[in-house]
Amino acid sequence: MYKNLAGRAVLALAAACFLSPVFSQTQALKEPLKIGFVYVTPVTDAGWVRQHEEGRKAVEAALGAKVKTTFVENVAEGADAERVIRDLAQQGNKLIFTPSFGYMEPTLKVARDFPDVKFESITGYKTTPNVATANARYYEGRYLAGIAAGRMTKTNVAGYVAGFPIPEVLQGINAFALGMRSVNPNAKVIVVWLNEWFDPPKERDAAMTLFNQNADVVAFHTGSTAVMSAAQERGKLAIAYHSDMRKIAPDAQIVAVTHQWGGYYTQRARAVLDGSWKSGNLWGGVKEGMIRVGDFGTKVPKAVQDEVLARQKDIAAGKLQPFRAVAADVRDNEGHVVIAKGAQLSDDQILKMNWLVEGVQGRVTR
Image 1 (spheres, rainbow, N blue to C red):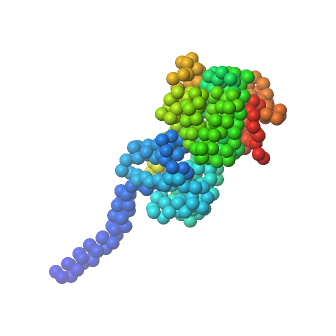
Image 2: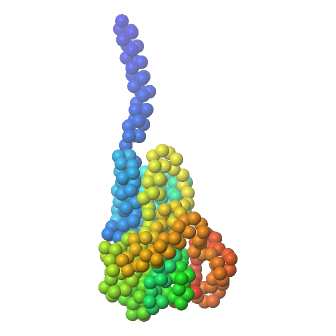
Image 3: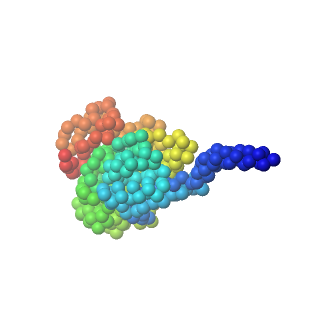
């Protein structure tokens, strides 16, 4: 009898030892996926970071208890970014989104030390087995906004407040100018470089300078809403970027070029949850739902709205490419042919853009 009891005890102990790893794994699977986000500016009501914050909220709404997200805001590019990204990895976040170009190298550095963590370098271009990159074709929205600006301007002068002369910004300026001149050949665009992404006082001053140079429409590639506020103050028109900014500039906004990150972020989180996540490099635009133009202001005639939305459908269908020369050669503002008639720039050429198109007043520091 004692022998049988002892045998049963041994069997029970063996079974427990065998089952415990399975039990632990099952429990682990029930734990929510921890996801971290790093933001380059404070979370404001509108702008670049606001759109990524909306993306984070979309992940929570779609996946519920399967995920637990957190974010750190106002993180400078460079050493601060590396420290924050590393801290998020150490805290057990298994998916980390780093949406700023200057976060690319810090992300890669941390990723080497945490091979079991998945990283998404937004606007970066270097991948590794656990670092994916994604970006949006912002220039598609800029072209559409240019059409609206070309129809709305009375002075034929638009201003453009720009952060840094990197390809992404140059793509936007050039697409805006091409869109504007496609409906208004006499239009010109004046660029002011700030060499800052987020400096509301400087952004406002730049906008005011452009208005003083006869610009009655202004666009921008910076991080705050200061340009929109300046346009509202001066009774001018403006193109909202990143977000709908009608709350800030109800009378000034013509249209908004908005970034939509929720779908991509949710898709990537699902991939980690189901084990299908792989590194990759996505460059999506209007077709993929990552860029949208709309949120027209009250001053925009329905005919202009319809025209812009029709062209947006053309881009989604592949019928319209902003960097395709249809009727004639496209030249830069120094007179060189940059797109021959009938030709279209490849993605590689767009990604390496280092020129400003004819009709733009400004220089690129090379």
